[in-house]
Amino acid sequence: MSKTPNYKRKLPILAKLLLERSDEDHPISRQEMQEELARWGLSAERKSLYDDMEQLRELGLDVQSRRGRGGGWYIGQRDFELAELKLLVDAVQSSRFLTKRKSDALIHKLEGLACVHQARQLQRQVYVDRRVKTMNESIFYNVDRLHGAIAANRVITFRYFEYNAARERVFRRDGAKYRVTPFGLVWDSENYYLAGWDELHKEVRHYRVDKMADITMTGMRGHDRGDWDPEGYARRHFGMYAGRPCPLRLRCENRMAGVVIDRFGLDVSLVPDGEGYFTATVDVVASPPLWGWLFGLGPGVAVLSPDWAVEEFKNQLKAVAAAYNPSPDGADFLKTDETPDAGGTQHGTSGGAGTGAV
Image (cartoon, rainbow, N blue to C red; front, side):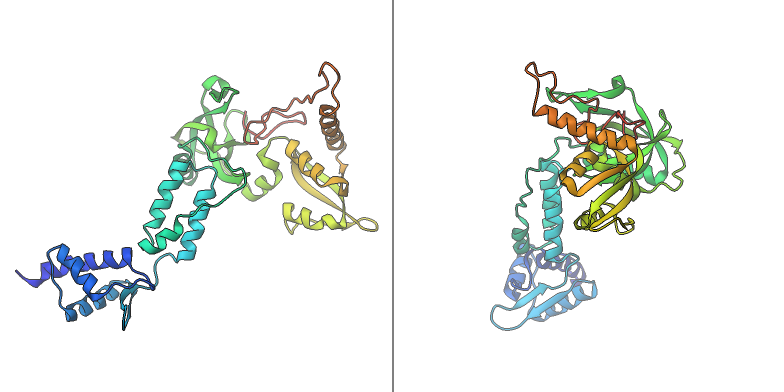
């Protein structure tokens, strides 16, 4: 038998052995290599192993060697460093939109990019306060389909649902299909949202991806995106709720400058307004999460205009106060026309035309 067939068999076996079982702290000795080859009915002399290692280097593997007691060969630089894999595992494990089963499957694949010794360090649990994994396995594949439709600029159809108190799916529009040109995906409040042109309402709306079912890409060319700005769209929509767009003018204590910049970016204009105060005008969509954000800042921030926004904020504050001071029959308990879904997308507002999904 010629040496060529055996030689071609040796290299993949040795490469697999090094990739799966070696690192700087766990080199593979010459004896271990010979024993592994023997399992496959192959033999190797000492000199030939040195030649094999050189051949693997020429093929792109970073094969390093260590002399002396406990020495041998190991893989030095890998495609992913251990710290990078830990970061990826943490991101997968803490992602709410991935089911536990999908998270476990992805982490197992990431472990395959490390040797067995490093993989043990990837079997970790990241604690994320009160984060609940999604129950919808299809979201992982929905995101992939949507990326394809966005790249192809094609109209998609889908059905949109919410959960009732019995944890059952209830489809909106009586189960009728939505027709939307997908513009982009937005990550907000631990959820994916699709923003796109709604063919029925003739405006840009957004939809929680984990509540989209039966997504199909059609052959119809999509609506022109124009200068649609995904970053600006996400910044204006607090919690991805729909509402009435407006330039909101705020008067803030100077200590609130960092809070305002963190939310609206360094481009926001902060105009001094008396001793210890500044004003800022920001483009937002007025919605309950916006009022909640402002309420959380306390008296350090006041809404100046527009007038209807000032009144709407006041009404929200009165409604919350009424919930803690109800009439004997409970008639004054918190009443509101807004009915947000479980993920923060509001459908229908008291302030004007909404931009969310209905």
